[in-house]
Every structure is written in C-alpha cells, then in structure tokens.
Length: 375
Image 1 (tube, helix red, strand yellow):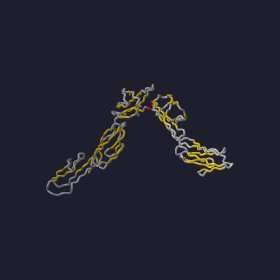
Image 2 (cartoon, rainbow, N blue to C red):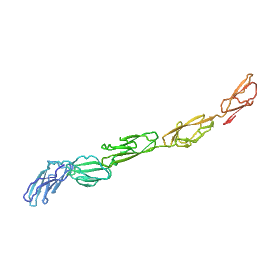
Image 3 (cartoon, one colour):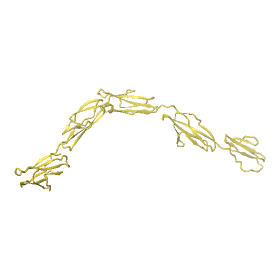
Image 4 (tube, one colour):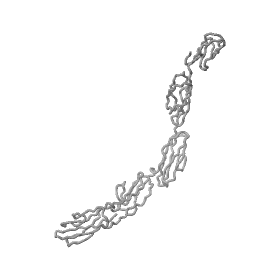
C-alpha cells in the first residue's frame, strides 16, 4: 500500500508552475497517478503524446520518467520533468483474537476490539463504526468486526461468538424405545462447563445409558457459574402395546384343486409377513396341491415384538381306484384300493376293508367316498 503524493518542481519565470504528481489510486495493481500542470498555458505536450494539462497514468511504476513541454501565452516555453516516486508501504490492520464467551440471557456487555494498525472499526451486525460496542445478548450471536487500512486495500475481520447457555448447550433429542431396550442420552456443553446433574438417577456425566420400563422424562441441569443455570429435558418413550391375539382358525381342510382365501384377523396386529411366500399383508389366496403349513410372522402395533404362527392347510384327495383289466383264472385274487384314513370303503358284499379276497368269478364293485366326493 502506498503514499499518495509527490511533487516535482521546475520554474519558468513567474508564469510557469511546477509539475505535480499525485498518486490518487489506493491499492496495489490498481494504482493510478495523476500528473498535473497548472492550467492556463497555451500548449501542453507530454512525452506520452497527450496535450492536456492533466494526464492519468494507470498502474504507474516507481522510477518511470514523465515530462511535459508547456508554452505560455507570452511565448515562454519550458520542459518540466519528474519520475514516479517509490511507494511507501502501509501496515495492514490486524485484530487481536477474542475467545468465544458464554453469557447469561439478556446480558448487556461492552466489546472492545483491539489490535494493531486498526482504523475505522465497523460492526457488521450493528451497522455502525466505533471503538467500543454495547451488545445486548438476548440469544447466541456471532459478531463480525471489520477494519480496513487507510487506502481501503487490506482489511482484517474479527469473528467471535457470544453464547447464551440455553443455545450453547445441546442435548439428545427425544427417544423412542421398545421395552427392555436401552438408549444413551448425552449433552454437549462447552469444555468450561462440567458441573451437571441428571435426574432421575442423580448422574453427573455428559452421557448416560438408561433403560426405563415406562416412558420417562429426564432432566439435566448445567451450572454455568454465571447465576443462570440451564435445564434441558429429554423424553424417552417406551412403546407399550398389547400382544397379538388372533380371532381365526389356523387349520383348514379342503379338497384337492380347491383354493383358500386367508384373511388374518385379531387384536394388536401391526404388520403381517408371509416369509415362505415373500408377501406382506393380511390377505392371501393359496391353492396347495398337498397338505402344507404356511408360517406367519406378525409384528405387534408397537413394532417391538414379533409373534409366529402356522396356518395349516389339509388337502383331501378326490377318491380314485384302478383295478386294472378283468382277469381269468382259477387262482384266488386279492383286490386292493389306496388306503387313506379319510376315505370310506364299501364293497358290494358290504365289507369295508381296503381289500377284497376273490375266490370265484363274478362282478365286484366298491364305493369309495370322502368329504370331497365318491366313486
């Protein structure tokens, strides 16, 4: 950063005035120099080719020579010369660091930014400049102060925080757990604040592990040492729900080829899973070819407990029989039919076995029946 003015003087009788160089720009790489000769001469001719009494040089370099030939109305002529001077560097402003400060709510305090080479100190949030600032800390606030150098080229910014304890102290959000589960509650406080107490439990650490049987509100009180203790609350809700109770028959008998529409009904039912079928929901249609058991997983309304059931489908086959071709011969024959526990058998000789010993020629018939029909 650089000084603003330098003058070179050369005289031509009482009418001629000196050449003056003014550094009007302020910042490095954007400095401008204004070279001035008193107005009123008849003619001007600069070594840059300009013909006015004043010229502007962009980004002038120290040591560069400039000259102007001036001619008065009386015919007096002279050449004035000078060079761009060395620029004097300006010291940059620098704030001293200010530590974040914990204050009680609605505190009024004076803030005095200090440092070196400070000029105009501007408080950004307050919108004014001063040496000291009265801050009214209703809530936590981040403060910004700015000080430029004399030319406005360099500036320094001071940033620090005023923490109101209720804002500076953070606690775990409310929690929801299942019966028997535990959860860790924690509080974040500045390092200087270590005097705290949790209730219920009378615990002193920043983190506590709790496992309440019922929904509980936990209080933590932090002593700030500034006569404004802070209390924070955390609610731990224990999800209680009645167990699942089904109001339906879990055993069904059908005939081969029939289908079953299952609709799970009961109390305390949340989500229903059919793990063997990759299905979710209370309704299901099945058509088993053989007797089969279908597992059901039911999550209760609290989503904490899972109840396992099996839906049993008993499939009765439609009766059938195959004696093969008629046969001849003198030997005894044994007629047999499939043996199923649920089938009823009646031969034309009124026996009810699954077999009949034939000792003579004749027509033999059997009636087989069950819940699904007969032949």
